[in-house]
Amino acid sequence: MPNGYMGKILWINLSDGSIKKEELPEDIYRQYLGGYGLATKLIYENMPAKVDPLGADGVFGFFPGLLTGTVAPLSGRFMVAGKSPLTGGWGDSNCGGFFGPEIKKCGYDAILIKGKSDSPKYITIIDDETQILDASDLWGLDCVQTEDKLTEKYGKIQVASIGQSGEKLSLISGIVNDKARIAGRSGFGAVMGSKNLKAIVLRGSKKLELADKDAILNVTKEYNEGIKSASVGAIQAWKTLGTSFGNVISAQIGDTPIKNWGGTVAEDFPMDRISKISGEEITKYKEKSYGCFSCPVQCGAIMKVPEIGLEETHRPEYETCASFGHMCLNDDIISLFTVNDLCNRAGIDTISAGASVAFAIECYENGLISKEDTDGLEMTWGNSSAIIELIKKMINREGIGDILADGTKIAAEKIGKGSEKYAMHSGGQDLPMHSPKYYKSLGFGYAFDPTPGRHTIPSLDMMAGGPLMKPNGLIEGVALPRKFKRAGDDRYEAEKLTVALGQVRNSIGLCEFIDFFQKYPLFEVIKGATGWDLTVDEIMKIGMRIQSLRQAFSLREGVNIISNKLPERAVGVDYLEEFKGFCQKFGWNPENGYPLKETLTDLNLDFVINDLY
Image (cartoon, rainbow, N blue to C red; front, side, top):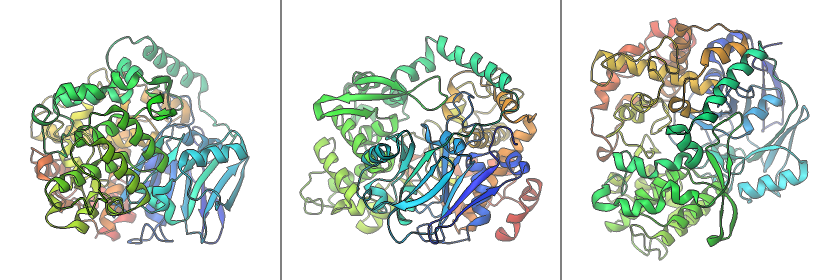
């Protein structure tokens, strides 16, 4: 019996209704861990090249991290992964809550879906029995209604579902669990909808075997005590305000984009307006704290907003507040609760949805679309009622909403008239709410990561703000080179370390916010769970293997990564030059971003060579 993982994955084919269990050897886990590490290996080898991600041959799946389901602190994350219909390359989306651990309790390290049903279906994995069932009575419901109806039928379960946006194949739709935790990026709501799959229902009772249960319990207890006793700093901010603590401070330091990336705090959205949507103002509506499985911080919150009749809703995250607030010059706090609830229910990514609204406002302001095009909506900056109505149109793909429901790249292609300059995307994915002008390393990540336009990519300048690689930081034996803030060899080496370690963090199921809390007992919890004595060199090689295979997938699909360009108003650094320096350290060709043959061989990725060369 394996330790720390189940050793099995589940394949479900919706075309023929077949269900197959597959055992995986230990060396696959040792090389790829879990999460999207495991996903890259399985999807690369089992999904034909250049297939339509919305077609029957498309493969996607749910992948809990290696440590997900254990008591290891902040380890409750899972990944949805496959080919992105939004970017045409590798896609993944990180999510928390309680769905990931339930996959392990059902006995699996991954659930992979292929094929396409002729009619709406949902999948149940309950008490070791897997079924594909009719979902006609669920189709058309939002994600909260879907979860409530399934819970009423089955009792205590975990549900991942799509709402109206996924059903209507919006390329910015996601998959929702825990009623408001959404795997929102890369467009997997559309992938799930294209397969006529409404929901996955889980209830399991299997136990994870651990190599040293006492050891992992002891280090977890010590870590959690440190979180509990913290009274100041980032930990307390996350506990109290969640990510919305960034609503003010991120704007103050120049991190938050203003007015569709074309404005400034001083001229367009001054602090007296931003303060109206601060984390402190939002948290006045808090009813109770909420957090993911195995999380001692509990940065989420359940809210009550009587002004709009919301008895129970989730606190809007920073990205949501910034995309519908700062980006749209909207200081109406109640509207933020409204659009957050609408998007969560419909299963649509709030980053791309807010960016699409800001794009539409700028097009309207410059006469590229008119009141006639918007069905009478006055799409002016800060018009919160119009923003709400536009989101409803996007969810239902009505009128102008149908044009915007696939993100700003496709919307600009449909509108034309020079609107492309207002579409703030990278490779088809709308930019998130953090600026490469402040965190400079985000520039090459937004442009050249296999999943472009993502703030959750490992970014040197963001991660260096926490204790990650300081002398007594997250990883024993790893420290940033002394001159990492300056362009040159030290910085490129630091970026190699950051990217590789970030792949490991995501693949073992850790929350990315560990970078900002306290020293994390990484090697101790991995050994306690699996028995593996991993070294720093082995961790680095695993991270490089995962990133290189993600890169190879996008290249195999025909994505010309090196030619991607960011919107000029979003960057202030030479991100191409920085990427070339990173490539040299990572063993990739700096002229095209291809992993070198010898790098692929060294990383045990020989099976990729023929695809790329």
